[in-house]
Length: 389
Image (cartoon, rainbow, N blue to C red; front, top):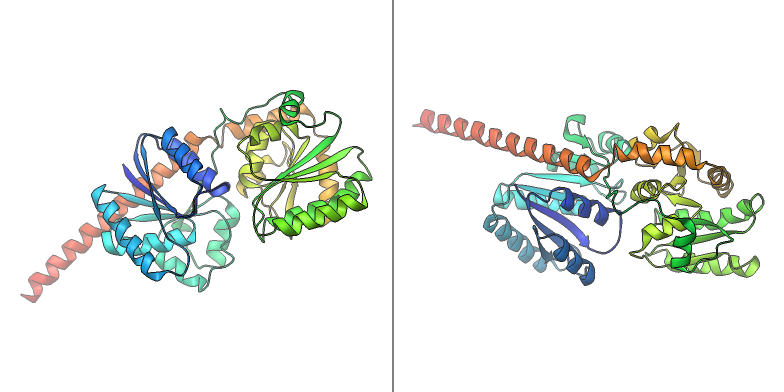
């Protein structure tokens, strides 16, 4: 199969990028063109080129205000589609979906759109169900949003869990991981990894406020936040103020390629989506939270199945510093035996093979449906032409 994966953001660090990278690995038997937005991290793109021989990468300008460049790059992609005989377009996120819709008008190549988050900034929500005939979501929550807010039918939506590379995220000795990272062996470490956007970044601010409550029940606790984004400066300022009033117990760091070591070095990971999955694979305990309003809480063997359904983005608890602190303290006490059991459970559900296999089935169904529609429309047009003559 010849596939165009359309990624309308600069390729940097994030859950969507990791999702696509896992998909590329799982679809290694197919020919893939990856289109990313200009301004991508060149080192990361080069690493993709070296790791995946079946992938060709092209850069386009899918964002910004240069309409002329948009048009030029749409024609550029249409040429890529025709030259490489692309059979299906996998559009990752809303803007990529709009581009795929336009490319379909030029090339008649069918497309599928993957939704990674709730699309809060989308205008004219009801119009998307008419533009996007087939959706993939990584959470049942997103299915509900598409149906209730965007007017999609359930038949238009396929739920596919994130898949991760279990060979990369494995349990490691905590002492050795801390030695590698230069971290004290004495502190209990809470780790939060996230893109610091207006939605996800709000969690980091609540997390800082929760530390006062955590320290009332747990001693020698340190908070490390790894993330970049629009709220980084606000987070830096809030952390500086907190450290001045208490102790220097909060550190803010940039994204890193050594994230598996950080998971293994931590005592509790606070996060959602791929971060939660990767941390659990490393047999670390997780508090699942995605936004500043509501959250899932401590992940246990009793609720792990529910956590997977919502991609660790639940509504069980109000996202207050006090409630978050309670869940963190609870998570400190989750035994190794239970963490191992949770890790085994997700290993059967969230592999790259499982995810890419489901994508492959959706692609084949969409291609077959598209061909059938074209045949029916072609036959109908021929009959209409005969009748008119």
